[in-house]
Image (cartoon, rainbow, N blue to C red):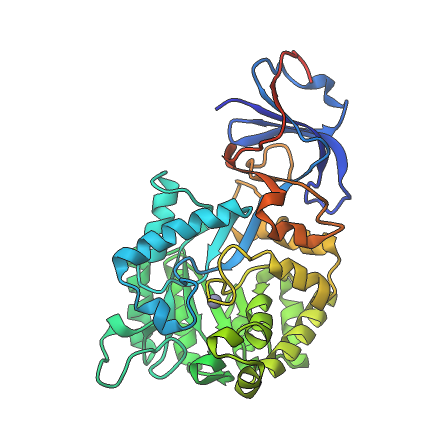
Length: 430
Ligand SMILES: [Zn+2]
């Protein structure tokens, strides 16, 4: 792997500082040097390095998607996702994984798979180079209760193969289920703590007993697995804090106690609200029968208002809010994920700087890579980075446009190399 030197780039390093014009050197899979133009007197010999003159393009860390479902297949219903045969389904996941990398998401946190082992198989295939995709954390299916969100079985077809989620009732069934997913090799266990109005169970309803939740967390921790929760209701959000469930998806309906709890434990949690799903379900899903009248009746317009209020409050309290969430429905297709950043700016009140940090610097720890660091452009960090035509701090929507993402590098290798002017260095020092 040749060294790569980016010159003449605007460097957004993910530290919170404003971008500056500089150079960045990648050696192997790491960032070896980064700094302002002309600082590099101590740069080691670079003969043979690939030099990329960025012509002022924006160089930033690769983005982290915090709530990813590769196996959602851009269809309009849970049934349509679940009924895809496993052979086609794994091919779909492989193809979608590449789409994320194309769009600059160099890391994704799996948030549930539609069949028991899809996520694990895809993660392993990415890691061993069989397929191309972002760094990935594999999730279990959604664990749910009979009649709850994710139980798509029919009374006459009760077989687990017809279920979108893994259905348990009682603490011992929960224990068995968590152990099964641990055996399959997931990184995280997903539990559906609240309903989801589109499935017929209202978002504000909570479906598990506290004892079942306790068993889930206890067993997951015993196996060294992270727990992530679908938590739209107030009770479910409080359970996440009380039980130490690190990853909270949605967190729409809060009261002052829930907000106080989240603020008091903000270092222990990541929130990924999945705003694009709510916005587009309310306003852009008519083609699939979900007109605004229908989704208003389902309660989603009220939920969108509640979720925005919650996110605005959490932002003021410095709670980490991350992009991503439930892309893979017909009205929120995979690859459009940077819309979350636009909504963070336009609807939550984040500055573009905060929105970019939420996708990079805050995403790094979300990936739980221990001593290996991502999410910032710093010496020693793994070389996951994007070259962007434009300034996302001036217009955050440029990150939605594939043509504006000129290059994507993961782990020091180009997934998409820039078409920009490239020269071989003949310099001995930068
Ligand atoms: Zn989800």
